[in-house]
Image (tube, rainbow, N blue to C red; front, side, top):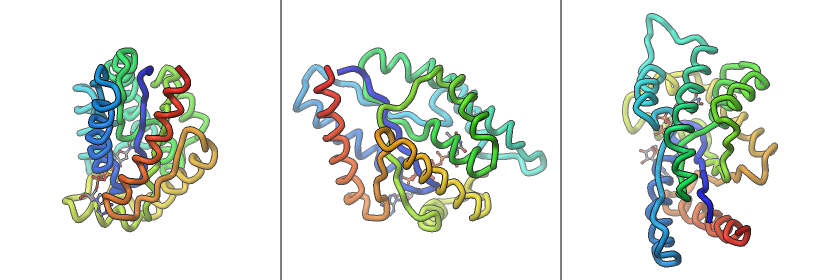
Length: 220
Ligand code: T5A
């Protein structure tokens, strides 16, 4: 089977990191049993999936209160992180047949910088196209949780980063963005109810992945 890019999306604290780790462990076990030659299941994230990206992540999330980042600057910094990530990490791994679990990708830019900040969606699409060189996810799992629940989970974990500190209405617009994206791309984006326990959410993800891997194996 060819490499696959599986993206996890959602509002702050929706459980992406938790579910990606569980999914990787499960996939590795499953692959080992079903296809002994298969080995690579990698986890990566945006921003911060490369050395350059780690520096950009610090700039984006630590923030500078005295010199706020302008909305278009923010968009370009996320795009710069992505462009580097696509060329340095995603394309080579996919070419080697790997399964990539990626924490956030282009839908986050549309949801946060488009719906959240109010930047032009057509401008964002062009910039995403340039940053990704046309590389789309094979599957995007949207972990759908109420914004308040997600923010409370993130807050319980520690100090809020620059994005988490944005007003509630901003995060609600972001959520609306994910909803619109899922409605517009029903084959690529699958909604997962993220409100249950970690194990319950993981059960739903495993069912979706099982079905998708079956379809992908039939394509070859
Ligand atoms: N961004 C990103 C943009 O604006 N534009 C872009 O183009 C891109 C790529 C990234 C920020 O950048 C923005 C979006 C973000 O604001 P980040 O640190 O990656 O920053 O932020 P998040 O992606 O939101 O990461 P978080 O770690 O905050 O959230 P996760 O990964 O969704 O959630 P997770 O798994 O860490 O869980 C959070 C807490 O909840 C608990 C966990 O134990 C943890 O403590 N939890 C649950 N509790 C109860 N029930 C469950 N089912 C739970 N699942 C997890």
